Length: 109
Image (cartoon, rainbow, N blue to C red):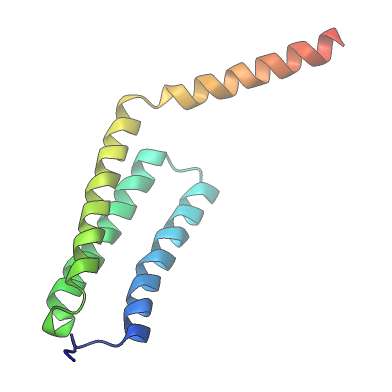
C-alpha cells in the first residue's frame, strides 16, 4: 500500500489550521467594522500563503490536493472582494429598507 508522506491525523490538522486562521480574521474584521472587501482580500492572502506553504513543505506531494483547493478558494475570495468593491451599497440599501419598513410599521400600529 502506498503512503503519501502524511498520516490522516496530520492531514486533518492541515485542514484545520487554515480554517482557524480564516475564521479568526473574519471575527476580528467584523468586530473592528472593516469593509468586507478588505476582509476578503486578507482571507485570500491567507489562503495563498497556506497553499504555497503546503505545496512546498509537505513531503511527497501529500497535500497537493489541499494546496490546489486553497489556491482556488483564494482566487474565489479575490473575485468576491472585487465584486464587493464595485457594488458595496447593495447591503446598505437592504438595511435601510428594513429599517424604514420596521419604523413605518411600528409608527402605524
